[in-house]
Length: 299
Image 1 (spheres, rainbow, N blue to C red):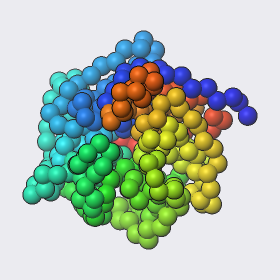
Image 2: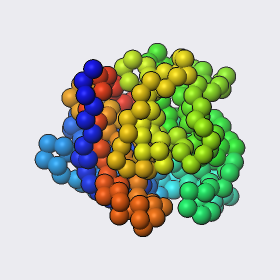
Image 3: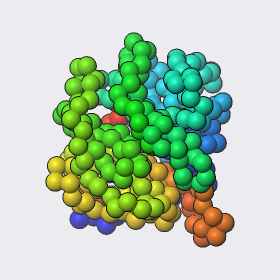
Image 4: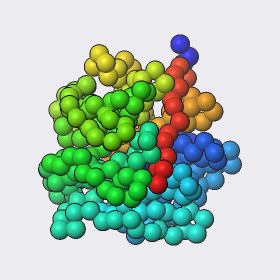
């Protein structure tokens, strides 16, 4: 097996870098910094980073088939026109709740945008429980609520045959699976496919490779786990030189590179100084597997 190589490609010291998506058309990596309220595009060829500042927490971003992006922004879903740097609101959820925000989101294989919410922090890395929900923005711009009583809505992925939806509610310390009806978007039959030990390490973002195995970022664990969702077994651990790994996606030529985002937020001063690459974006090569192209929002 090829030897695994990890390099920091963007030493951004981001507060909470998240939601990485590879844009094949332009060969760029799209991602957000949630708390700094920025959306970024990084071009590995010339190492240029372009940024748009938005007016609320930037929980997640996905490309839109017709151009531009869809954003989970504060409590709103919105379109972002990158060229004009204009944000257009689609809808706001849970108007009566002031203590939630959108977090991770991803487009499903039918072109819907699924994104979940979470309770606000009461103190660093401690969150209000049962405040969140999981939503789907349909291609006609209507919104469907799939789940409520969510603690910290996070990583999303779909099986290669699109029949299973994998989902992480971080404070459940598990990767869960649902049966997924691609035509209707309905989810059912929730079950646990991988359980982490309850503690400081929490599962965060995730993606899937072309063998149907999941790659799960472990916040506070400084690692990415490769999970076989059929057997519930951990197959591989990739250790990163930073503790707060947040999410991952495959990209690059043939989707052979794994990009990993990380955070500096809530690192104490000593850890911040010790982890000189914290908040950076990493490229992991030599894994011996490839990813699949991401889906776009089709509305």
